Length: 106
Image 1: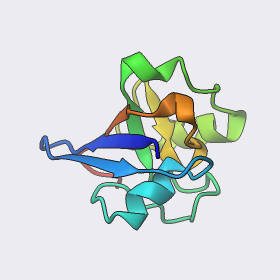
Image 2: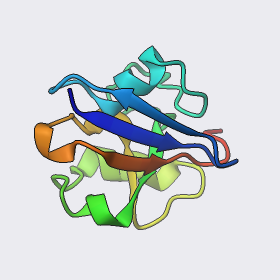
Image 3: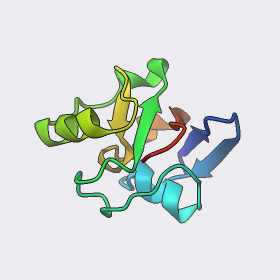
């Protein structure tokens, strides 16, 4: 099963198994990773699953759509590699993806 690595702002690191097709937000909340809230349940309406995708992985993702882009604009401390983890679906090709978490989602 593919894995994702979540790295907290304080350096804590968690490697979790993610089913193909599952969102990375679901994987984080299922594994109780602090820093990914997923308040809206994954419909791109809250930005509480905001992550920074490691640069080595960013170009392997499909581009964010307009709705995701608009939510990233209101996320706390957005950067060029910001994405909503609810919009990233795990694939075999993403095995090992690294996601850094912001200091806070609020």
